[in-house]
Length: 560
RNA sequence: CGGGGAGUGGCGCAGUCUGGUAGCGCACCCGGCUGGGGGCCGGGCGGUCGCAGGUUCAAAUCCUGUCUCCCCGACCA
Image (cartoon, rainbow, N blue to C red; front, side, top):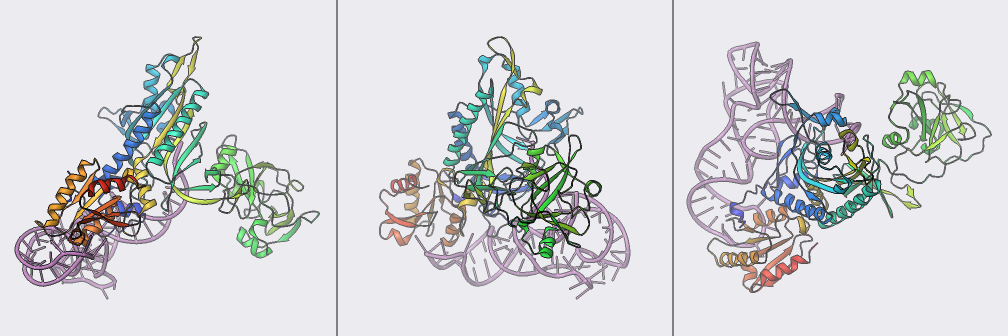
């Protein structure tokens, strides 16, 4: 029984003053969520219904691949986190209990679930396993933002697979990918599965599930047959802008031109005809390297990290000491290994001359300096992959699947005995999904001027029944019986029987965004009909009062 | 962490520069009208102006400190 007059659904006419993202504005206005603090949100009854529907979809798909649901605590002793090295993570909330023992609030549950498996599984006969739970995650984010898009506390479905070896992990990973495909589809989202960075903690492979929308914090590079987070995306090399021709580099005066922009103006060449130098120092060993990318390209530090390992930009003193004045650094004559980005095609370029106020024109990689090829540039819209043009879209990360390998089983001692009695490390995968982000993504993707347009599967209610007319009127009586009929179809119904004007009711219904709205009012009732409107697109039709509930249920089943 | 902005009734805001004891719209409560797009009339309730200290006869307003929140960037196992 959900009657609007007694339902806690505080809608607002105006969005919060400081809200930017559509999902932030609409979820607050529609009465789904309320803020408690920075990155801390309550889910009000209607919002929680959405969350729970998504959770149920995820649960069904996890169960379908053999996942076993359980529950682990949010607060943990610090000890296993110290063992895995994750105690040092800045985002980890740390606290002490009354005895002064160090505790943490979990960001994920690898340490705990792995500990259980390590303790309980001794033999290959106990594997494989997929364990999962829905549990609150705590992360002291530097910058929470955009409503429930990036919060410090949120519920995540996190699953962990345990296998004997890499092959078993690969199979578990594939099953999870298939399950994730299905859950994203069932939530009614537009989504991409993209190749992702494996991050500082290493790992053997990772895919992210991305829901494209304006408020997205990640950029994904998409072309037919290709999808990757821009953090790892690669594109084809491109043709060079300056023709080769000079037999050797020519020194040209470029006084004061320390930026790409300045050099292009002084020499009247396009930025793509320049090579930009990015001197770095490797963390491991402290050696210096000179990274070269085209002047119109940007170094992608994540790709660079993947290519060379941990590094830091060289300081101005180090640059001056080893190469030349910052702003005029180039590869010719540099006594350093040069790593040339693969986006640079063979041809002639302008580079720094390693002396003040001068550049070299006509520098040809290979002829004028030796290099090792690396792929470290950030792709941009218009690049091609296998000849197909890339576009770049912002997206929300709603899920992430990750091959952990033995990253956790090793420090936590998760081993098993194989058939020959040999101890072996368990191979693990981890698989996250954020119902709150999925909900916000659905809002972002389908909202219109009037409000939210939920996909059928995740709407707070299937049908909102609106009755117009005074209390005690004929319309009211008919709507009451229609409400009963609708409930008997098994659909979830929100009945707006408030003593309010039609404008207010329609506006609230559109804000909340249930896929169907039925209206009982004098106008159509005179013809023996009630109105049924599809929220997405707002097409409406009239159906006879007799059988209206069945007709609406039928229409509902055909909705996206 | 760097940059920018904001805390005044449930929501959105004005008032702060130039100190004089708090106001507007919506919401809410009561009564009446209206009843297919946030309608109308009348009457009401509600705020120690984020907090602390200071200056002053007098502080939302000036000064100092502090807390909180938002936006952009950095960051995001």
